[in-house]
Each structure stands twice: as C-alpha cells, then as structure tokens.
Length: 417
View 1 (cartoon, rainbow, N blue to C red):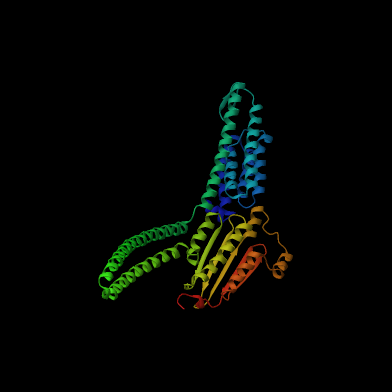
View 2 (tube, rainbow, N blue to C red):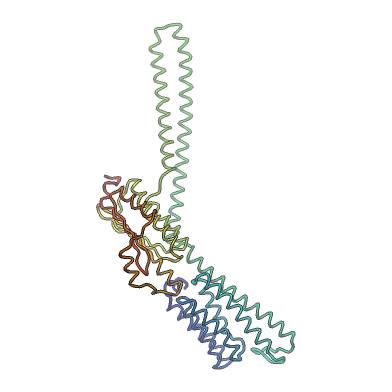
C-alpha cells in the first residue's frame, strides 16, 4: 500500500481520507451529531494533502484538532485520523515537516483533551463513562494523555519503519543481485582454496627437487676427485635437476601472479549492478536498462565506463535529495556504446518543498547557454577522450541533471578484436 502512496500522490491519499471520514466521522456523527462532522472533515482534508502538500496537511490537522474545543464538543474519535495523517507524514515528508506534525499532534490533542476535562462537570458522563469526582478527572486526564501520546508515537514509528523499508530494503532484483554476488564470492573462495592447494603441492615438490640437486652436487664433488672423466655426465645431471626445479618455480610464480591479478582486479561494467544496489539502499531509485548485445571491453575501457557511471551517481547523491529517481541507459550497437544518465533531483526537491513549478524562462535560457563545469566533470571528459569518446553534461530546468557519453568505436577496445 505504501509503495502505491509513494508512486501516486493524490489517489491513494484520497481513498485513505474517504475511508477515515466514513468510519471515524460516521462514529462522531452518531455520538455527537452533525456538528462533529466539521472537525472530522478537516482531518480528512489533512489526509488528502498529506503526501502531496505536507504543510497544508499539517495546517488542516491542527485546525481539526482545535475545532472540538471551540465547538464545545467532546473529544472526537476522528482524532485517530490525525494519527493516520502523521503516519503518512512520517513516511514521506521532510524532517522539519515530520517534527512539526508530530509535536503539534501531541500538544494540540492533549491540550484540547485537558481543556475538556478541566471544564467537565462532576457526575457528567463522557461516552457513557461517569465522572463522579475531581480525582476521576485527574485519572482520566492521565489515561487520555498517555493514550494520545501512545497513538501518535506508534503512528510516527510505523511511518518511519515504512520509509526505511521502502528506501533501504532492496527489491527482488536487488536481492537477486546480492545472491549472485554471494555465489560468485563462494566460487572465488573455492577457486582460491584450490589454487593455494596446488601452490602447496608445487612447493613441496620443489623442495624435494632442490634437496635431490644438493645431494647430487655434493656427491659429484667426490666423484670428480676420484675420476675427472665423469665431470660432463655429472654436470648434465645437475643441469637437468636445476632445470626441473626452475620449471617448478616458474609454475609457482605464474600461479601466484594469477592470484595477485585476481585480488587487485579493478571494477568494470560487471560491477555496476552491485553499485546500483548500493545506491538503492542509500534511498535513490536507480533504474538500469541495457539495450543491444553487450561488447566485452578490455579492463581499462570497462573501468572508464564504470567511472563515468559511479562519478555521476556520486554527484547526484551530493546534490539531490533522497528518493530522487535515476535512469541509467546503456545502448549497444554492433560497434558503439551510448550511456545516458538522467535524474529528477530538482523535481524531487521542489516536490518535497511543495513548490513543484518554480522555474522560469530564464532558467531555460541559462541551461542552454551555460554548461555545467567542475574538476570532476573535466576529469571524466579527459578519461573519455582516451577512448575516442565524447561526454556531455546538461541541466534540465525543473527536472534535474543529464549526462550523455558516446563511444563511437568500442570494437577497438574489445577483448575480441
């Protein structure tokens, strides 16, 4: 349900508001009459705006909480709707809005309840409960305030839990990628164990051969003194032993070099999925699409592609709010690659502040005439030039940032060239 509320600002909130009005407002109408519908309607309105316009929602709920006091009504059941509104705010509003909503809900609801209890005449009933003495009023005040605080605190924590689940818990695709990485790590560990086992066996064999060679050399010194004519044959035997030992050393060296190359392998295109998983866990909605058949690039070229994507994502993280959407498109042809990375950071920021359309013609003109600059962007452009690629950076007014990189002839840098 919360994913639905996140993706559609108005329709889910409208349904939630109508449900609250019909159930809670209906109960208030039944117990206190038509006048109670005023407060219930204000709180229902606050739920409608809770996702799209949080500040307006907070205003409506505050007025709705104060209305029963000014209308001379008993504390309304619709106050539960204020906690529903707080739950949505806690999940989707920014930090200031969440804190104002949480504090206001508790303070105003408690104040209204205490005001009602203070002016309650002994021997009068409230929702059928008799209040015979002042001590009963004190007990009822304590119970009521604790109940209101508990209701709002639970709504707050449920909202924050939902936000954490949506933002930081991976999707099925993310989990599949993580499982794939775990499997790859297990395979790598098994391969490392096998490789180290071979290295141990080669070392033992090498020690045996060196030991045999030392025995041969020592015995040869005595044989040469006794019969110098055996020198060529003994030297040939020693040479063969040394050559065999050298081959084993070379085999061990190659094996260890392979292990070192594996351990210091630089990131590349194959590591992008794990990078996307990381940014999804950080709260950014990364969508990756790949069109065409991928070309297997050499390590350095693959590293440049990875750097372009990772630096762009890092730039989005530095300048855009959480929940920003990021689209990453790889378009492969038979000989070329185009990378498109787009985000809606500005749009998300304006939506969070309730100002979704505050950009002008001047912004469009600035975007057309002024190109983004910076040391990081210049470094990416220099990297791209090493592989005959071009890269462009552009701001899309009211939306966000766009990076486009084109590698016109990646076949030159493919492993199958």
